[in-house]
Amino acid sequence: MAGSRLPSTRSLAERWWVSRGTLEAVFDRLQSEGYVQRVAGSGTRVCAVIPEQFIAVPLARETPRRPVEPDQLDAGVQSHVPFVARRPDAGLFDLKTWARCISRGLSSVAPGVLEAAHPAGLPALRVQIADYLRSYRGMQCEADEVIVTIGIRHALDLIARSVLQPGDTACVEDPGYLPARRLFALAGAQVQGIPVTSEGLDTAQLPEIARLAYVTPAHQAPLGMTLSVSRRLALLDWAARADAWVVEDDYDSEYNYNTAPLAALKSLDSGDRVIYCGSFNKNLFPGLRVGFMVVPKVLRRSLLRTLQLTGHSVGASDQLGLVEFLRSGAFVRHLRASRQAYQARRDTLLECLGGHCAVSGQQAGLHFVLWLPAGVEEGDFCARAAEAGLTLQPLGKFCHDVTLPPAVIIGYTALTLAQIRYHGRTLAQLLMAA
Ligand SMILES: Cc1ncc(COP(=O)(O)O)c(C=O)c1O
Figure (cartoon, rainbow, N blue to C red):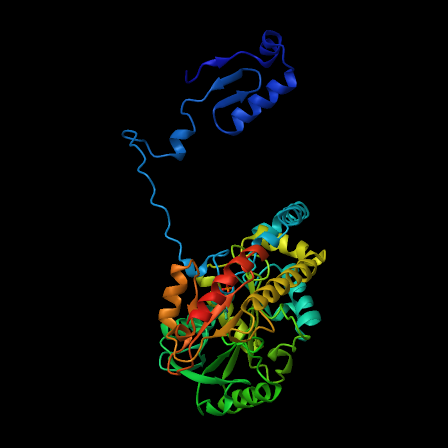
């Protein structure tokens, strides 16, 4: 009862045969949570009002919980569904190591780090990312050019909000990555599609005036070619002439199966015009939500202002864990192992398909393009595939103004070898019957 006095810890210890130390700890805990009040010399009394009354609204009556409707997951973005594209296999990710990295990161951190606002991301993480980009993507960048994001789409959204004015022209690849087009349009930009040839974005077709051009130079999304060196130079030249920005989306460049990768476009950027966007969401696991940008000096402040305003940033625990993951070498070990696994999956699928079709873009990344026999309608083929349990994305979905021969996008990285053999045979049969 409120105000009543509790027996002393000494008498309770004798009555219950427990140590006094344990009872002192219990009383201290009850006091720290506001249930009792301990006054030296006058013992321990029950508080007049229990703490629950201060932290929860009074309930008129208990209402039964209604059953929750399950989320409808979009099949197009699920892993382990044959042949959903651009999904990594989170099963290859070593969660025990990750848990150790988070625990090590949290236990070594001073409370000030958790309290301080680091809108660009924890300095230690930016150092690790800059080191990685120097060693693996050939970029001469420093930690003060890096901004931690929750992924590439977040980076594109920040760019759209900070760099684009309504009516500006934003150039994107056609076919291309639809969220880039949509995010630039949301900011009020006039989005202009630029066709893609076997060398990547057709730079000769860029307009004289534009605010930015968005490209996927390492592995064009979705066609999969690499932007040639001469096109890279032409693009940077154009950006200087048009006083425009180049947005480099480096979404899957870690996975090369035939040759060493080309350095990032940003490595050639002597004019500081390239906004580089990378992500750990593909090479670690999609639920992680950590990415990064390397930004030109003059854009840094406005991008950070937008970032702070929207409050979208990665939690400190994940950032600290990632610092340890990168510093300890676990990240590069994971890249080596996942690359090996993905290459075996790709090879197995290509073997299953045999000579029944033409493919392209298979030299890198997490997907390739499967060209359908002439005259086959993409929608019909995808519908037949769906009846056989396969989820395929038609190439037409990525095209805005251009028309390309019929093709589908094939993802293989989030499937086991057994799944690939089984579903690969089905796909080969569908192709033969087409
Ligand atoms: C070309 C391209 N860029 C960016 C992304 C998304 O990256 P994030 O998950 O880091 O936003 C994807 C996802 O499939 C992609 O295909």
